Length: 372
Image (cartoon, rainbow, N blue to C red):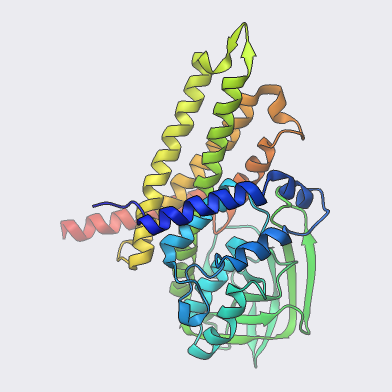
């Protein structure tokens, strides 16, 4: 079976890579890191005009209809550029609306999301810890949401949010909240990667609109799995750039009269990164196919992609700094931009140990079914 993307998606990848190389250099990321801008608005506007935000959204709902494989292609290139935009949050919110929103809600909100007119975020966590139903304590009664969510990625710049909360019966569901509306208080949080801002959002009887088409913890797990796949591609994109940076520096940097790339210790580091990246890419490609096809083993594929991509990006970003030596630890070098992003994405949607547990559980279930 061939899991390579179709030719039209490979063309999309080349166009995206060319566009980001020209229009989204790391200098734009540094402007956000230095606090000059809350996010890279120019890149955000440009990719919205190119239809990237609506990649997985059907055309009849305002999207570009590239499908989830197209979304993954774009996520990889944005990850390679460590773009300082709320793309991941927009993708997750789109999945929530397509999963749980009714027809009217989808027609109302998905076009605004696809055009970038409204920035969306998703509020699930209520403090540190991996996803678990006991950690969802926010509640909605009489259409009013009360509770506190943190950290919320892109919560300071978003106009609307999809919130995981409990209804009057105690069942977990998704609710849409206008962040400019009454009863909403936002506070910026410090984080390792300020280019993807985090917020604490307090809801005090804030008007909330229920997304009725899916509910319960199973719906939350489905959202996490479907969101994990494009994030895995963002991670392998970042890992790819780290390998390229490390290789290029090793070829240019000379010590004892020859390039440091000729030293065995450096070769081993580069090879280790390459092997981890290829393993992650293999798992991510299968997960992209499973997501596009809504395959029965999407849960297993998403967990495998999530684990391998997290480990690959962490290794690549760490070893990239080591290959650069003393230069790698300086503010002037771009290495830290990727290390910051690797740590941030490694904790998004739950850490690697949590996804490893899910992967092992899924494999045990598959083995039990086969033996039965």
